Length: 138
Image (cartoon, rainbow, N blue to C red):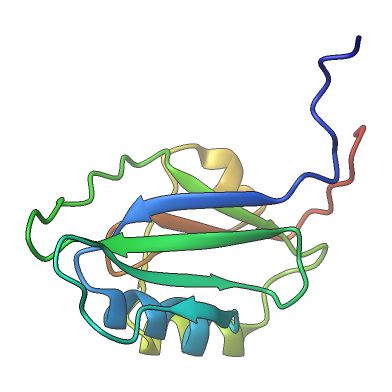
């Protein structure tokens, strides 16, 4: 019996956010991801949620906020969400991300400065727009 993880599995990365509206502006207005689902009314005892990603993709990001027991996001300088663009990031994309609440930061690992641009989102997590291409098996 094989215990390998299927490469077509759906993936959800979940993490807390101190401000779902600010995070949404960054990832939707800035990066161009779509809102796949969001909490529309407050339900006592439940988290507020914002799910974002490319429509139809096998992955998405779930941002959570619990107003009754809020968690302060604790990103490190090496918590990265890397997008392999296969070309340098368009300057207009970088400007949109900055206008949407991002902050350009130097990478902790110089590899990412050599091959891309690192931008911290409103919660301090880092998005890397990598100019390199990547494919499975490489």
